[in-house]
Image (cartoon, rainbow, N blue to C red; front, side, top):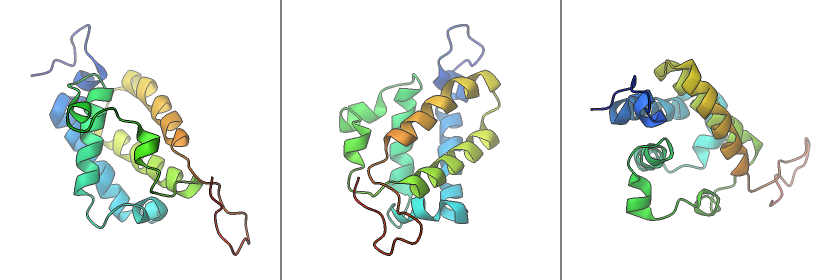
Amino acid sequence: MTNPDAPTATPYDRIGGEAGLRRFTRRFYALMDTLPEAAACRAIHPPSLAGSEEKLFLYLTGWLGGPPLFVSRFGPPMLRRRHLHAPIGGPEIDGWLLCFHQAWQQTVDDPALTALVVPQIENLAQHMRNRADAEPGDPAGPAPG
């Protein structure tokens, strides 16, 4: 059992451990599946989001200071490399961040944790960009990045 009030509580503890993080990742992917503003991001995911949800849960568990579940199962994260198959530009990043922000706001009630985690996640999302955005009116679409 995690104790979010412990003086050395990790972000994982503060989010509520496994139960809190599962609540967040479940909400995150429910939003991705339903928000029209997340359509570009949703489009680069498989038809079922179950595997993506599980991988995000495993990754965030370790990233937030819990057990290194993702690394134990898949090895080092190398997130950009693992996502090179998916075209990630501004619309995909914006949709992903919209889902993250809304799910976080709806499931995490810890302003200090928000101030710690959200800017790092925003930087990580921007780091995932692997293509340039199309210029308005460009019929060729996005150029490889």
